[in-house]
Length: 328
Image (tube, rainbow, N blue to C red; front, side):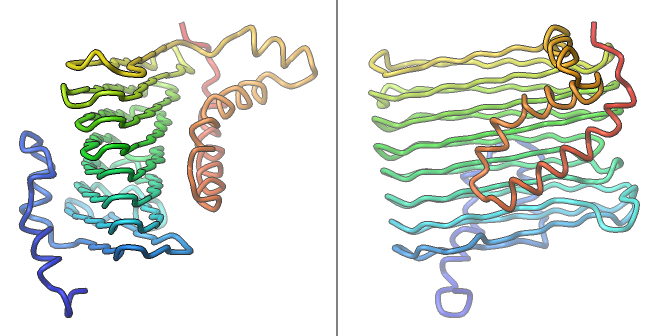
């Protein structure tokens, strides 16, 4: 593509309209990134396996700014796995990662995107993902974050073609003094569009998690079906989380427009029930937490990514088992 049709790359690099103009980190990545990935799937192509993009950060006092652009032609089908981690054995290098992903889906296209973030404990990460979904196209996000000192994540979905749909699942599992700030915007612009958005978080020790989501249904979006769910489980008294789902509806003729949220400690009654069946308390807590996250894990469209994420969550649980003080 770069040699035969350079205009494709030039067009997407010069076009920054898909990134939020008010987000400083998104515009920083667009202006200053020196590393990037451009994926172009021609119309009608069906890729049998996933495309893997891997980002590693770790140089002390340095920042990595990246930009990823994915263009899927009409009727094409593809999957992409983005892995984010820290280089080096201990992963303790202080660093900044600011990255963007811009997705363009043509009519009738299908794209599965799985993201796994396991940065070192001193990494600050800022990520912006934006998708434009055309007529009868389907986009499925499945994103999980367990690492980093602080994560600021924003997802923008624009359903611009009739029959376009997005399914989004997101996990945050924090411990220590980690901070996760997860925001999503889904804009229904065309008729008969569908959005199904689910976020879940587990926070232990002094970790904090903030979930903010907005579903916007414009006047032109008759017959839409949209749901937003945000749920968090607290494993310690000092852990904190806030869930703020919102709706803006300018078109009353919709099939569904709803949201729900909850934040609370692990259910002691469930722990007691499992212990009465002979399961030790720590193992009972682990079963409940991983079971709470499993509906999101199972949405990941790539089996190998599912198993890798289950391994990450299992390793993340080890510190949680140490601080087993119930949340207030």
